[in-house]
Image (cartoon, rainbow, N blue to C red; front, side, top):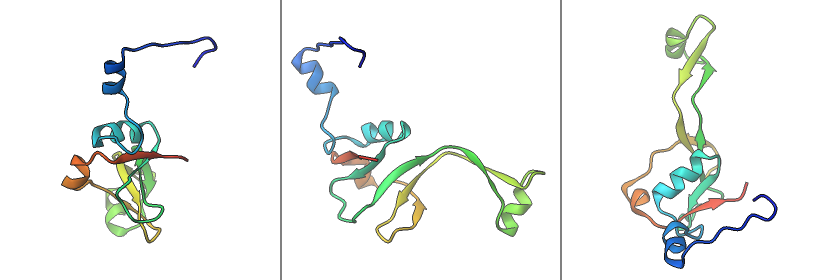
Length: 111
């Protein structure tokens, strides 16, 4: 905050608007991941697992199928997506389960 900045909210407004990390809904976690934070569920027992946001980009075609779809410069456009660092270490694309969507134990991880 700028030096000397002070903000006050009524207690009920503050408590409705702010949640400790580890008590966030999926919606709150999605907003955080879109801002560049790593997110995870505190209920996940996989060490070092986290979800992160990958913005839309273009990548070099590396398979025959993708080479058929590539532009003249050999690049394929990809939409934005969420990725997860798996418990085994490699990264995969990720879509939340119903349990993930309804959970209230999402947290922001430090980078």
